[in-house]
Every structure is written in structure tokens, then in C-alpha cells.
Image (cartoon, rainbow, N blue to C red; front, top):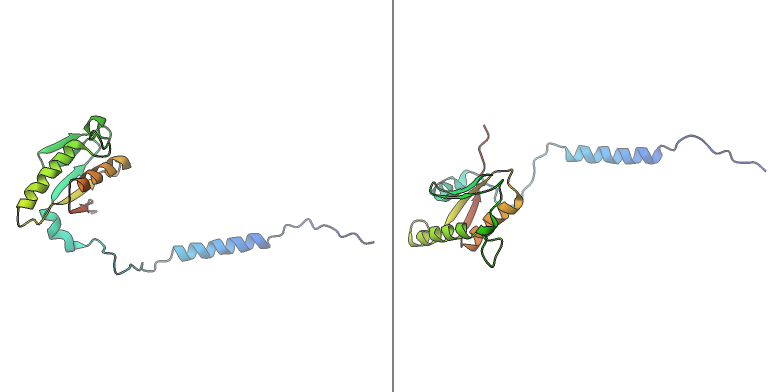
Length: 154
């Protein structure tokens, strides 16, 4: 009987199939076509410019949290001191909650403001836990709208 000789050549067909699929995928993903956005999603544009100017500003850096010029909380490498946490709610920052509650009460009394709106700007090096605590505290204090404000690129 005849013996079949095993070919020592490498079968490249599967490799070529995979590489072709990867090339097509990369070409499709890197195309310069415009991104379609659902009509229900509102992208941030200049339409909020006047609203943002009237809001209270919260700025959170690695060293401090600041509301306006008067209220400041010292931070240690972007983290809140555990002593600032509410007794029953560890995610709630007590001094920030009290300050926002006072601002909300004065905004509720002002007929022109129609509630409290806050602009928040964060240092991008902040730990995500600190960002969550600020947003959670503002929400629990009754803030109507929170606007995330970034730096303008030149």
C-alpha cells in the first residue's frame, strides 16, 4: 500500500482569514464618518451658557473643595477626611451637605433663581470615590441640576 506523505508546509489559510477580518474591522472602526446621535440625547452646547453663569460653582482639586470664595474643605491627595462623613451615611460629606442645604434654602427663597443649580469642575487626577461623594452629597442636599464644567482648550 501507498503511504501518504505528511506535508511539512504550514497551512496559512486560517491565518489569512483572521488577518483579513482584523484589517476590515480596523478600517471600519477608524473611518472618519460622522457619529450619529439619538435625538433624545442633548449634547452640551453654548445653549447653557447663560444658565451656567448664574449657578453656584464647586471646584474640587487635589488639595481642596471650594464653593465660591468663602467655603473651603481641605483634601488630602484628593480624598476627604473620614471625620467629615455623616454618622449614618459614609458617602455623605457633612460640611458640604450643610453648605449646599443653606444655598438651596436661599435659592428657594429667591424667585429669580427657581431652585439651586450647581456647576462642578473636578481635577482629572481625583480618585473616583471623591467625585462620587461630591455628586452624591449635592444630590442628597436637593440640588436641581448639576452641570459638569471643563476647561476650555486653546
